[in-house]
Structure formats: C-alpha cells, structure tokens
Length: 142
Image 1 (spheres, helix red, strand yellow):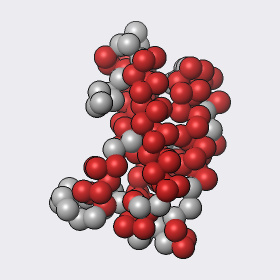
Image 2 (tube, rainbow, N blue to C red; image 1 turned 90 degrees about the vertical axis):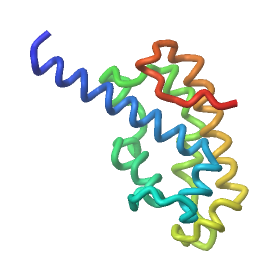
Image 3 (tube, rainbow, N blue to C red; image 1 turned 180 degrees about the vertical axis):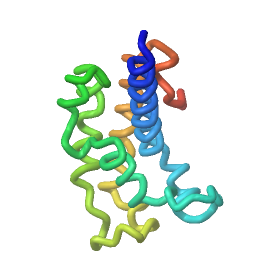
C-alpha cells in the first residue's frame, strides 16, 4: 500500500470513528445534561448544543446527506439506513423559542428527547451492523 493510500485509509477511519462517536453523544442525555449545564468542566467550548450540531452536520459534512459517503465507501447502505431517522430528526430540530443557547429548554423539550431516543436507536442498530471492533467506537450502554 502506498503512503498516499495509507494516509487516505487513516483519514477515512478517523472520519468514520468520529461520526460514530458523535452519534453516541447525541444518544447520551446524561452527558448532555452534565456538559451543557456546566456541571463538568471539559475545558472546551465544544460542549454545547450548537457545537454538537455543528460537529455532526458541518465538521463531518453530513448536511448534504449520506449518498457521497456511501459512494466513497465511508459508510454502507445499512449504516445509512440505521441512522436515517435520527439524522432527519436532528436536522429538522429547532430549539424552543429559537434559542440554541437555552440548554435547559432544549434538554426538557419533547422534540429533543425524541432526537436523543432516535440517536440511541441508531447507536444500537450500528452496534449490530458493525461487528469489527475497530469500526465501532460506540459505547455499549444498556
């Protein structure tokens, strides 16, 4: 394998793992409560609703959907199907009153709780699909 091919393989694996970890964070309401409310100092401004949405949709270029990533081999059709409902609900989500900084309102919003539930369903479905440990950095919570 050439150095360029090795580098590309590393980039693809990192992108994939980061995306999967992002889904696991969406599925963890307790983590959101602790980090978004300032209960834990993670030393990063990334621990907020806005940054989580930006990370998933912008940093991983998912706002355009999954087709290009399937074509590039970064995800399978089964993986895209597993996250489809979560992705659509998260993309459509609007914070109460349009205030993306009101974490308390977001965390108690039934529409957000639905996004969290759909993320957990996606996480569980992905765990069933991804049997190679290097491809599934998702916590196996109950």
